[in-house]
Image (cartoon, rainbow, N blue to C red):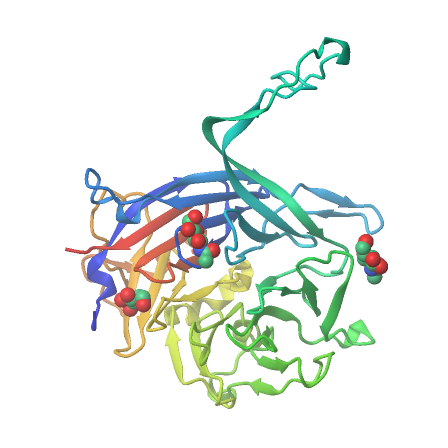
Length: 437
Ligand SMILES: *[C@@H]1O[C@H](CO)[C@@H](O)[C@H](O)[C@H]1NC(C)=O
Ligand SMILES: *[C@@H]1O[C@H](CO)[C@@H](O)[C@H](O)[C@H]1NC(C)=O
Ligand SMILES: *[C@@H]1O[C@H](CO)[C@@H](O)[C@H](O)[C@H]1NC(C)=O
C-alpha cells in the first residue's frame, strides 16, 4: 500500500512487563520474537494463529519459552564481575523442527536449541516410569516401549558455548549469509567463528594500538552483509563506517570502503565527537544501503557512495541545546539502535520520554509515537506526539524541559514482512500493529 501513514494506524496488541529489556529480535519469518534482559534471561514470544473465533488476534504474541541464558560470573584474574545482561540475540534460520539462536553477554556467546516435546516414552525395561533403575532380577519379561502423548513442553538447551575470545565487551554478533559462520565484535576486535567449532575463532579485525595510550577510536557495532558472505561493516566511536572484504585478506585491518561525512565546521563543539559516535549499523534487507544511528540522527548510506549519506533524519534535534546536561547525567552515552521495515521503505529508532520515531523514506514523512501504559487501552489508536521547540506550546505538545530522560527507547524491531513492531521501553515490551480494515 503506497503512502501508508504510520501515525494514523498503530495500536497496541501486546504489553508485557519484565526485567529491563536489553535486546529484541524477530526470527526470519517474524512468528517468533526473542527478548533478552538485564538478568540474563531470554523470553521467546510466539505469534498467535488467527482463527475464526478470534479474528483480531493477528498481531498477538504469547510467551513460548523462558530460560536463563547467562549467569553472573567473576573473573578472578582481573577481579572483575561479568554481568549476565544479554547484549544481543540473533536467530539462525530454521532447518528442522527445532529453533536455534545465539545470545551473548559481555564475554560469552551461547548457541541455544529450542525444541518442542509433546510425547514421552513409557514402558522401559531397565527403569520404571519415574526413571529409577529396576533391579535386573525383577525384569522377567521384555517390553516394547511406547510413545504416549503429553502436554506440550518447550525446552531450551545450551548447544555450544563460545568463550574466552574477547578481552573487551562484546557489542555485536551477526550471523553470516552462509549460515555456517558468524562474527562477534568487541571494542577493539572482531572475531569470526564457525557455528560448529567452539575452541577456535579467527581474528578478522584488530584496532588495538600497540600503546593503549594512543587509543582514539573503538568499534561500536558490526554486521555481515545480508547476501555477500565475504562482506561485513563495522562502525566506530568517531562516526565512521568501514566496509571490509574477507576475500582481499584474512586480517581485514585494511578496509575496502570507508564511509564518513565531513564535519560541518560551523556546528563544531565540545560534544561533536561524542554525539557523532555510531551506536548501531544495519544493512537494508536488499543489501544496497546501510543505516547508522548516532546520538541525534539516523543516516542512510548507499554502499556505492562513501563521502556522505544519501539521507539524514533528525531524531530529536531539540536536544542539541541540552547537550551539556545530557553529558552530566550520562545520557549522551546512550546507545540507541535503529531498524528497517520489511520493504526498506521506512526506518524506526528510539528517543527519550518513551518516544520512538518512524521516517518514511520516499515522502520524508516523520512521526513521533509514544509507548506508554496510559495509551495502552486495547485497540486504541496511538496519537502522534509532538515536542514543542518554539516559545509557544500548543495543546497536546510537550516541552523539551518536561521530557523524562529516564524513559528511553533503545531497542526496537520491525516484523520482516508486516507492520508489527516491537518496542522495548525499559522493563515493558510493547507490540504495536497496523490497523487493517
Ligand atoms: C520462525 O518461527 C516460526 C514459528 O515457529 C517458524 O515457523 C519459522 O520457520 C521460523 N522462521 C525461520 C526462517 O526460522
Ligand atoms: C578443537 O577441538 C577439536 C575437537 O575436539 C580438536 O580436534 C582440535 O584440535 C581443537 N582445536 C584447537 C585449536 O584446540
Ligand atoms: C514496511 O514493509 C512492509 C513489508 O514489505 C510493508 O508491507 C509495509 O507497508 C511497510 N511499512 C511501512 C510503514 O512502510
